[in-house]
Image (tube, rainbow over all chains, first blue to last red; front, side, top):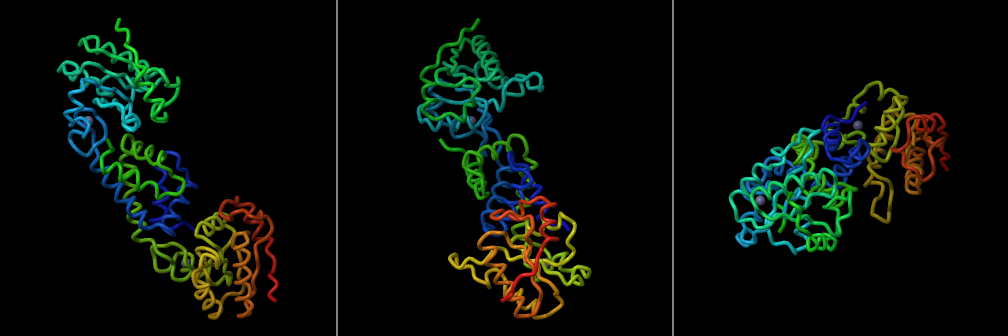
Length: 202
Length: 202
Ligand SMILES: [Zn+2]
Ligand SMILES: [Zn+2]
């Protein structure tokens, strides 16, 4: 004897979430049906809406439902001449939460990983290159993760910056090697920003 | 600077799931947007459908989108004369997975808890009583959890059975005291069923 089709489907569908196994999925489904149908409906609606409407900012590639995100639209940010390159939108969020950085971002949505077929184009470096070419950026802050791939990606972008004679710096102080940027506390991130050093460009 | 409205709403809505804190919600939202939009859409659809369509079986109170569930509709099950009382639909699932029990169920959707205002009516004991009155049940197997509330509830139902001269038994052997029924392996559950003993009814 099986559960009803809608319930079986729900339990199966819940497992698309990382970290949710079959037992957790069952518990979540029963919890929502027994105690929080309103919450379940809101989640259903929010998922459908977000999956349909949220795309990428044309300028920085972060998630947004607008053509260009709020940060990229800010004249004050544009005038800063600063562009911070990160791997993921969660990194933007973590840096914004420090309240100390007032420049623009560029979100790679990953890092260089030739083994997985992820080259410069897959992480938007063609878009970044045309930005550097256009001018208006005085310094690129390389805030990729302190992993091997993150360092390789930072080095690659530093060379791009050198080509267009734009300064490049790497956040350094306070970021633990092998750690993940978006798990850091705000204080450590602030130190990492203020302690950045220029990158040797050949 | 905040995330876009749809994304903020999604992260907030994901937290209706037990065990999902703000950090997990953020990771799930980004994972779905970056790598599994199809899964996210399916989950949205499955949630909306289940919250709207899944109700309670008129006969046993378990979750179903039909008026009466498949188990209650089975003539073979009706003819068994056995009625197993459990606290939750997950318990039905756990017992069904042993493949050994061929009777009917009654799902309390909880247990007696006067402090929380949960009396006999809140767990459907009026419906159970009219079942006992109607006849056709030879034995009620009390398979509530081996917690204080589960034992109290089992005792209360045993008295109801006594009133209508229906036999009552309590699953016993193999169920660890303080444990939860739906976390047991199938073998332990089978032992618990075969080792059941008659309940003293005053
Ligand atoms: Zn943007
Ligand atoms: Zn039923």
